[in-house]
Length: 62
Image: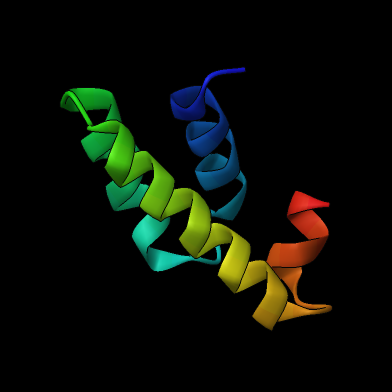
């Protein structure tokens, strides 16, 4: 699975609880997004998971 697909799937799972997820989905689907931006989004998702512990976001992604 490439980074773009991974990010889109993760954001799709988070779109109901993470306000920025919907915006990022639109941006990624409509524009050519640089690999560095995808890396930043992946790191943000990972960091959010570490902080979330037992929250809804973590349950959806694990």
